[in-house]
Image 1 (cartoon, rainbow, N blue to C red):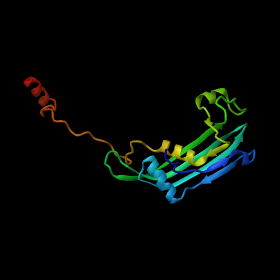
Image 2 (cartoon, rainbow, N blue to C red):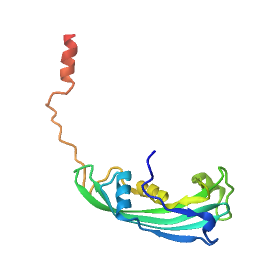
Image 3 (tube, rainbow, N blue to C red):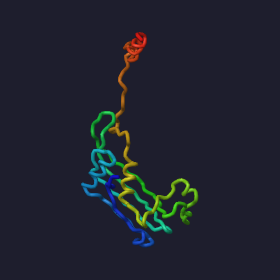
Image 4 (cartoon, helix red, strand yellow):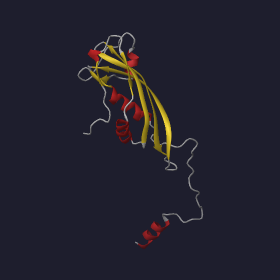
Length: 170
């Protein structure tokens, strides 16, 4: 198993009941590891502002991430820069079947089940990595770029014509 490209551990027991806001800006070496991990050419800037608040025996992380990165266009195969932003709202619970907190309904729990809280800790680096990878377009194109299929020549022989000829020989 490979090592995570980015880790920033927060112990929930160390937080005040009102929570704490963490502003994360990974260094260049970490951004390079993240770029390889999420399969982009480069991450020029990555910022996350995440509020971590204890909720019952678990925690809730809210905030957002934004990044400037470089991807390869699937149309022209040329690199281009793009910006992504993702909102984060994740609950962490130590048990598998949590009860809704007063600010959450049972419907909220059905839509987005909580992530497991392991050893009373949340890895914000792992969360940033997850949301960053979700924000990256898997089929990136430069702005305004459109794929145009090559023109088809209706008079050209079918590629299967040679196979049909072989079948007739057998």
